[in-house]
Image 1 (tube, rainbow, N blue to C red):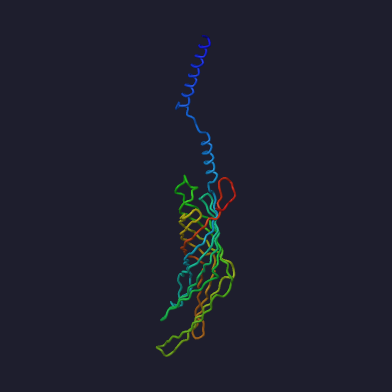
Image 2 (cartoon, helix red, strand yellow):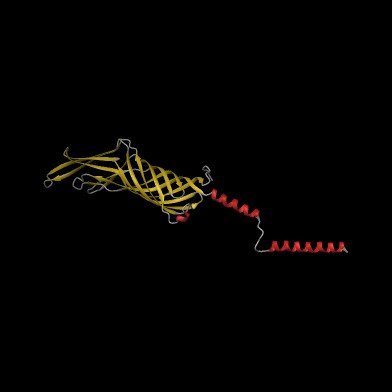
Length: 288
């Protein structure tokens, strides 16, 4: 009888323990958690944080139209004049972008500075003189942040910048032109022989310039940007000079100088390829 009572008591205790165990498992207040999935999620989140791009290195190719103006000291009573000249050019650049806020760019360009000589008369003529066509510029740029909460994100955006550069000059003669003409005076009884000499040379020393830029950058692929920009330049020093001498019957009567320092405007577009990325994790740059 004792044996039966003991066995019956053990069965009852076992059922109570099992019921308690089932109640704990299905109790919504103490849910069971898959720790393996949580750990994997934490790893993915950390990895994304570590992989966040903080710096980029890019190579760019530009095509543009450059309009620069020159000044003239004497027009010989309207016989000669000058005006702005427009010419296409190209450049290559190497740039570094930090946290999608600041950028630094080094540019080499093949673009001339012009002197434009206009000779007025029955058959007007224009002569465009150019310097050695080279310059090197360094610029700093700042992104206009309209989305401060996501400033680290790479997206299409407006940028502004300022820079300075140097213009190497060879000091060589670029063009020498001689013009001859005739004019009647005293009611057609006397004819004068007119001569105009034009001598164009580059500066023998290096000159410089400063500029400001406004641009809109469009992200078209993970490593490719398309950029449209407008730039204003101010020349520092005369790069190209045209000296003009005016003779009447072999006697010099007037002289004039046309100078060009590169001041003007540039409108262009640039295709940039990002060849290396830097990450917040502190890893070195790597290509992708």
